Image (cartoon, rainbow, N blue to C red; front, top):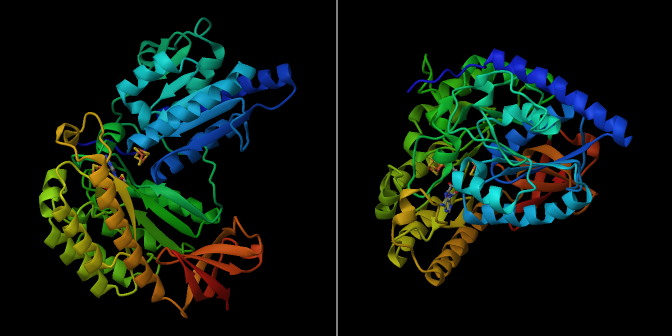
Length: 489
Ligand code: SAH
Ligand code: SF4
Ligand code: F3S
């Protein structure tokens, strides 16, 4: 299937119009309450969601809301994640707390969006158990947040849709406005964005996922894979660089399959080559790479580039070929090992990090032995280790589940092994002087700055806050766990 992947200018114009209408509601609020309405956005989940939250915040700030760092606000938006069940449970817990704020401030608006609300069963649960939620929207239509807020402020009885088409895009359940789309071919860019960091930014290069790993809910909640037009990506990055960004992170569920569904297909490696030429851009990162699509061309580009960071996040999920097959990962243990070891050989200073799931249905101790074997052979620099979580609607949900106590035991073995390889890797940098992009004042100790090496290792060191957003040389003096204490040179 081919999707139009260019920005939809008509929709963009319409949304600017709704931002203006929402502004009128904000002004009315100011007249009535003698204060500017406050907004708080909470992000659960991955970089994709974090970027979406910047878009949501940009829109509500453009309409006149003031951002605050508290949930006791006039507008609270939860941008949710559903990759594991504990992410859902966390949101339900937090919603309970929000209801107490809403009792004190009945005019408060609560918006639920993101991956959880792409699930019909979640929407049904919200309708019955969390009736105080005002707006429910998913992942495909967050660009419509100004429109939906405007309609919610005006109220069910006072608002009439502009046309049939618009009316079909949402419905009311009592006073709850629900806008649930299974899929969209529209991409709406150029709406206001409020970036969290001045010097770095995420840039979506694709949306959705076609891989259908048997445990994973993402393809169901993020829709089919759509790549953005390369010219529009380049234009966005140039604008970010002109605005002071020196590092960008290209975002997608499977970035190395970028470009396949474009009218004029280009490879991810080719996109990187084009981005690299942008003057003033210093660092390029990307997330996430699927081992099955990692090409020789990409290794070549990474090897020869000064701007592409020496870090590759390459999710393994399992080291057992039998389990990988059941997971529908399309590579086996040998192929992963061959690939990872070749990358280590070609790019010796690269860090390789990974994701591992323990407790996938049918996983035995012997399967976990295989996972541990891969961890030891690749010597991962770091790994996110997850306990398998059953996601309704995915093929793995109907497979035979592993008892919890066995999973816990195996999980600890994997974690232990990852910690060892991470220590082996971080040790190697001791004494080296390396460039660090200074990110912020250390959260625990304000005398320290925090930054990142090209390989993504965090370094803390003494320095002046004026260095934030610049690249400086730092000597890696002493490592503690996963980070370094360094000295500015
Ligand atoms: N698109 C990315 C990752 C998306 S989700 C990729 O394929 O690499 C991030 C990670 O969450 C996955 O890599 C996987 O390790 C984990 N994950 C996904 N579904 C899960 C589930 N049902 N239970 C436990 N972990 C899961
Ligand atoms: Fe999920 Fe697999 Fe797609 Fe990653 S590649 S988002 S794990 S289905
Ligand atoms: Fe979670 Fe959705 Fe990201 S399910 S991991 S927020 S794509």
